Image (cartoon, rainbow, N blue to C red; front, side):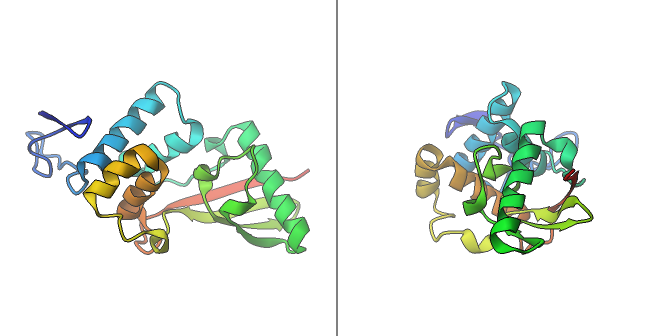
Length: 184
């Protein structure tokens, strides 16, 4: 092992280990690996909440089962209802899309990102996919120097870049989001 870019990086990254398991982060740069290391440690000490846990579940642990209401706490579920009902009232539509600009302080936009919803039979239904929008990538996303800058100045952007490598909206590898809440 060597110490590189503020994280422990295997000198054999990308090669099979003695156990025959491939290093899944072999295609990542030092700053990207450092960020994943930091997010793992943040989750372990309880920093970052649901957003960090779900990100780590999908990106670092390879989660494939649906994200459901059980993955959010009661305050986040209340925030979810609030933003959807506000959007439905504003548009007069019982279905639509929540984008980042629609979020409130009760629900971190990093938990679900943009998502589709419908209100039907007095239930709020979110049926979407946890993925990262390929069209939001910038031209510097693969530049290691800029990744290093992003590690300090824009870790959210760096995390999104890693997400696009793993589960872009064009990859078909996203994790289903299936949330159903009573509105009574």
